[in-house]
Length: 167
Image (cartoon, rainbow, N blue to C red; front, side, top):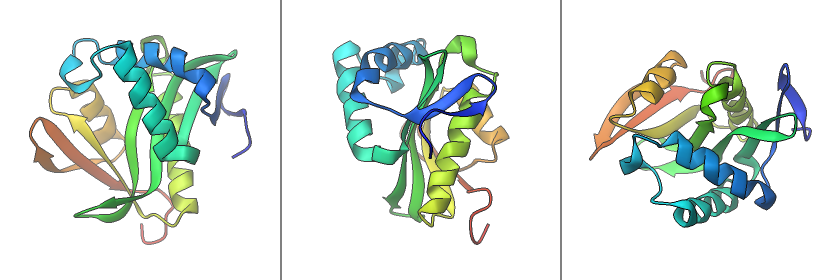
């Protein structure tokens, strides 16, 4: 993926860096307001989690920015082993700043993740979402994700990757 390639209008998607972490901590903590049971306890935990995502997801740790300012990010691992589904594109996290929700940022991030999954030969995308995170669950359903199971307060969802072999 070319660095800084415009995705939609003024939105650019690029690889995330360590320098992005402080801004992403703020985005992550804001995203889980009212849903704290699913998020990190505070800035230190959020920073640690984001560094883990960047290390683990490598090429799938992407930032959406507008005018040089991060407005969202995704952490997607293109070759994750799921004990039921096999190898999948695992969406560990996707966050969009509230002011940018509904403006194509999340969809642009997902499209980049799907492209990464296709390039790595994946046919399925999967994720976990908090049971009470109704807004995210509805959005994932609109994107074609289906519920396939639960574990505690978490719901497992998956969908075929658009344009992937075997879709």
